[in-house]
Image (cartoon, rainbow, N blue to C red; front, side, top):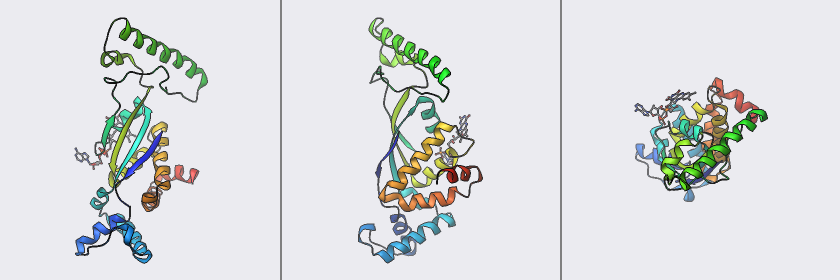
Length: 215
Ligand SMILES: Cc1cc2nc3c(=O)[nH]c(=O)nc-3n(C[C@H](O)[C@H](O)[C@H](O)COP(=O)(O)OP(=O)(O)OC[C@H]3O[C@@H](n4cnc5c(N)ncnc54)[C@H](O)[C@@H]3O)c2cc1C
């Protein structure tokens, strides 16, 4: 589950910020005319094409993410993001914590046995052997879900999407990357950014197959 919970400014404000390099100080998004906004949209795409990318770092997006631990490990290799993950030192795993399932029902049946056993032993070593949750978590499977907040700027989010929508990435994180695109398409402040990303991603050979399938 991926939810876009905060965006620090409108995507077209990236153009306002870039204008200062020509000494032009502009109003923020809310007080601009329709004509100005159209010009800003054109400039947004031009900045991207020119590779004037540092200005995209002003736009910061915060997501809530719930994924299996193994996906979170792949995610956190993206060092330019900021992360705050739910701690298994300070909280305990619940009985009903979501667990990863595959498309293979026979395999799932076997996996569920291990998940249930791991959770049972986890509870026992805490209750009967007085281990702290921070020690007991050592036996938890990678398929249990974790939760974190992720903040990333618009430049590095594109890098994440490009790498994780690729057919070389694992299917699970590819689906998460698509959910991020869906969130961007729905949020009023990121609709132009979404268009810009789609435009750029569709030029990537190992991605456009996936985009064409869904759009
Ligand atoms: C298909 C796939 C398979 C992978 N397999 C493995 C694996 O087996 N093992 C593994 O450990 N990782 C693996 N990775 C992770 C990969 O090596 C990257 O760490 C990850 O994709 C993050 O990419 P990034 O460095 O571009 O992103 P970020 O860390 O967000 O960095 C963004 C950009 O900032 C710049 N940057 C960031 N840090 C530095 C720096 N220190 N020096 C110079 N420039 C920097 C680079 O331009 C970089 O592209 C895999 C990734 C993919 C997509």
